[in-house]
Image 1 (cartoon, rainbow, N blue to C red):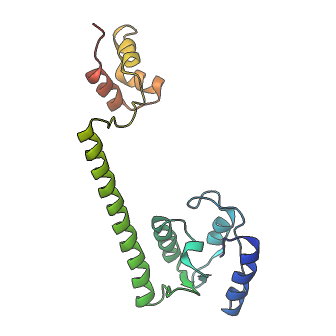
Image 2 (image 1 turned 180 degrees about the vertical axis):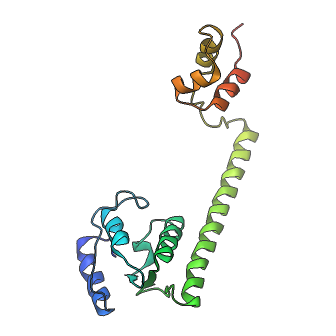
Image 3 (image 1 turned 90 degrees about the horizontal axis):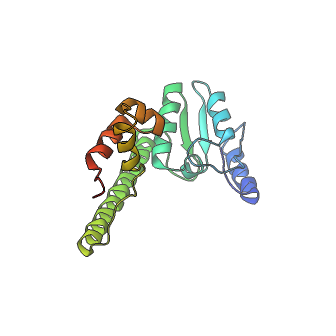
Length: 179
């Protein structure tokens, strides 16, 4: 499986043929995750137990570590192994599985660092008095009007506004009536 621009597709296809691949599929459209990637979906449906999915690099197969882990899990459930020609990835071996696990560890570490930096930035913005948080998705005044004037229940309000009941209760709790 390759997902590249046309000149690079040829190079990758040659590498995969040299590695013994019989069927080579190329994703011409890019997409995030597995949605919008029809070649990947077709390939995953085509594979049978005992098959090996060969890629040049795992980043050609998945857009994120979470996506890669989901694909590897699905392959394992099908009895299909994953190998990469340019990386030490081979899910038949302990070392290949360990390499994939290390990718996951580094991705989680990076996510945690990003979250820590975000929290530090939010704390600094709050200290300066400039942090406002996310804009409310609903107008508490509308919820209050539906509840008090229209005499609608929380479930009906939630359905009408396309929000959860908890959001209705929170809006009512946080609503400040005009003076």
